[in-house]
Image 1 (cartoon, rainbow, N blue to C red):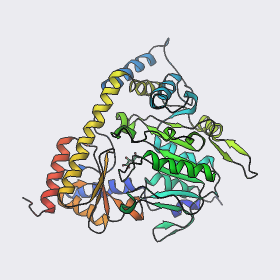
Image 2 (cartoon, rainbow, N blue to C red):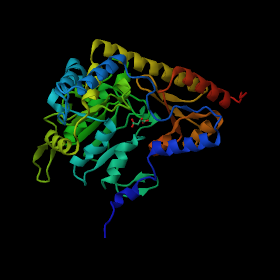
Image 3 (cartoon, rainbow, N blue to C red):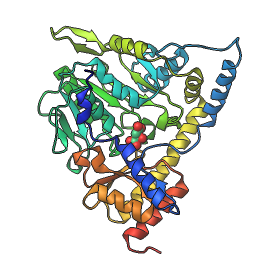
Image 4 (tube, rainbow, N blue to C red):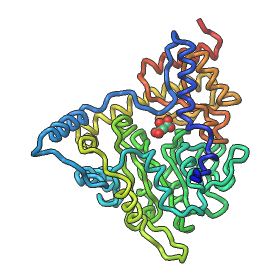
Length: 411
Ligand code: MLT
C-alpha cells in the first residue's frame, strides 16, 4: 500500500497567496464592473530594465545560431554572472565572497524552500512570526515542526516580531540550530541595523547554529548605514547562507533568476561532532536536482550590473518606493499605525481587529487587495500588509478609495 507523506496534512489548507487569489477571483466574478487594484502579493508590474532587455535579445540571437548556441550550462551558473555578483554585490561592500560561493538559481523562493534538505530532520528551527510562509511550510513538509495547535506548530521556536521590539525579534531563550531571518523584512517592511544583526551572528557562532538570511528586498534599502548583506558582519561567513533575487531588484518575477551564497567555510555538524562543509552539500544537491538557469536569462541578469543597468534598477525601486511612501502617508493620516515602506516595498498597517475581516472589508468596499497579516502568522493578527508593486496611478486611486471608504465619504 503506497503511503503519503503525512506531514503535508499538517499544512494549512492552501498557500496564502493562492488562497487570496481565489478569493479575489470569486469577488471579481460576482462584481465584474469593479476595477480591482492589487496591492497584495509582491509581484512587480513594471517592464524589465532596457539594459536587461537588450542583453536578453542578444543572447536569444546567440541561441539562434549554431556557432554561438549553448546547451546545458554549469548548474551553478555561468562564471560571467557569478563573478560580477561576487564583485558588485559583495566585494565592493567589503564582504569577501568569491564567485564559486555563489549558486545561480531560478528563484529565492525555491532556494529558501529547498535549503532545509541539507540539514537533519531533528534540528530545532527558529522562525520569525510573522513570516514569509515558505520557510515554515517547507519545514512542515519535511516533518520538522510537529503538530499545529492553536495557530502554531509545537516543535518550532517562534521569534515574535512585534511593535514592542520594533519588529526585530529578540534572540531565542532556548538553543536553536537553524534560524530564518529576512531583511528588509517580508511582511513587516522592518529593517535590521548592523548592531542588531551582529547579535544574531554572535549567537549563531556561540551556539553552532546557521542563519538563513533572506535579502531578496535589498535593492529597496536607502539608509546607507544599514547592512545590505549579512557578510558585512564579521564572522558571518562561518554561520550564514544568504539568498538574493533579481525578482524585485530588476523585475524578474516572470523571468526567474536568483542566487544563494554558501560560503566555503560555513559548516554544520555530524552526529559525532565532526564538522562538514555546507557548500559541498548544497553543490551536490544543486547539481543533482537542477540544470541551471537559461543562458539568455543569465545574460539579462548580468546586465543589471552594467552602468545603465544600475541606473535603471535604481529608478525602478525608486518608483515603487514612491508608491510605498504614498500608502504609508495615507494610512498614517487616517490614524493607522504603520511601519515599513522606507527601506522596503512593504507597508505593515495595524488595522482594527481581525485582519481577514479588514482584508474582506477593503476588497468589498474599495476593490483594493492587501494581504491579511494573520496569513503570515499569529503575530500578524490585527495587521494588513500592502505591497507597493503597482503603478503610481493605481496606488493613488486605491488610496483615495480607501480614504473615502474609511472616512465615510463614499460617492
Ligand atoms: C510576497 O508577496 O510575499 C512575495 O511576492 C512572495 C514571493 O516573492 O514569493
